[in-house]
Image (tube, helix red, strand yellow):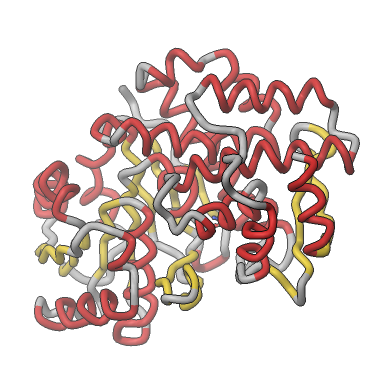
Amino acid sequence: MQSPAAIRVELGTRSYEIRVGAGNLSALGRWLEPLARGPRVALLTDPAVDALYGEAARASLASSGFSVATVIVPEGEEHKSLAGLARVYERLAEVGVERTSTLIALGGGVIGDLSGFAAATYLRGIDFVQVPTTLLAQVDSAIGGKTGVNLRVGKNLVGAVHQPRLVVADVDLLRSLPRRELVGGMAEVVKYGVILSPSLFAYLEENRDLLDALDRDALTYVVRECAALKAKVVAEDEHESGLRAILNFGHTLGHALEAATEYRSYVHGEAVAIGLAFAVGVSVRRHGFPPTLANRVIRLLESLGLPTCLPAEIRPEALVRAMATDKKKDQDRVKFIGVEDLGRTRFEVLSLGELEEALRAA
Ligand code: GLY
């Protein structure tokens, strides 16, 4: 299948392309060649991804003349930490990464965020490329330059905005993704449909079976649409001074739910799906979002295999406490993103009391 044209993230001299398609991994070296400042690259990945795709990535890079060192980061969010970052720096020094080298993140969100922050800071900043291997990373985290690590007190509290030089998303890589991760990624896809694209939303409703069967064309269409939507938002508001915050739709509750359940009960996308259902419910009550549309959102999430209900055992107070410690809140008030219609968002500042009330009504 021919790879469709690249999507551009327009950021002046820091603009870059996102390549979405089936079989793209084999073209990584060819696409990097005109961009790279030097012949050395460090491929950062985890053992599972390395076993699946490391060879193919190295072969593509080597055939374009790059000398490749592989840096393996153990799997798991716990390695997206200051200690994990220090180990990455040491390995980058050991393998001889220089100012002109490029760091390549081959993996999901953990690898992307950690590699991106290492690239933002090592030698005061080197180039990096995102090769996302999960649906979540392909449609969201690999695009837009948010990088960072977690602290014990909260996620992503230390970081930098450092844009990649190139994003290469190969939808064939999604075939090896555990089902739960793939379905989780679909929550972010639904989010884009609800906040930015009625046509994507309708496509998801009509083509759920194709997506379920990992149809290459359907996956390419969906990842491409989401990447293009995110590219536009990032180009308009790189540092989240306004518009970019709409991408947090459904995440206020989603993050709180993950924190309140100690990151054990839900994969990120499942918590986001519950957050999306909550956000459309609040939107019906406060922003005139039509109940028929809210039902369609919930039906779509459920038909994709995502949860939409808060578990009975979690008390609203626990969720509000978790929201109160989220870095996106400001003095006991939370910027809540609602929708008035498909593709039309609205910001509202809610007190923690109002949020608790909304949770009780959910
Ligand atoms: N994941 C939301 C953003 O990149 O802004």
